[in-house]
Length: 77
Image (cartoon, rainbow, N blue to C red):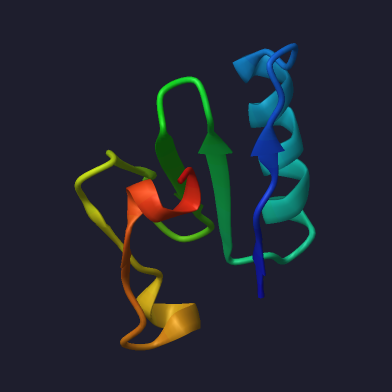
């Protein structure tokens, strides 16, 4: 199970981290936060640290999406 909120311009990272923790504590394994300001994707895992994908990085969540991957920038174009 995965969640994918999008960060609004008025939302602070402290609020987002609290929301991510809610998802992870309720059993969601992976949570992605899309940040339009920095054009990055922040991927939080229930069982390990987080990752940040920049515009030119290949984004994938292999545990959830298998071999599917896409350039991060495509989420923002």
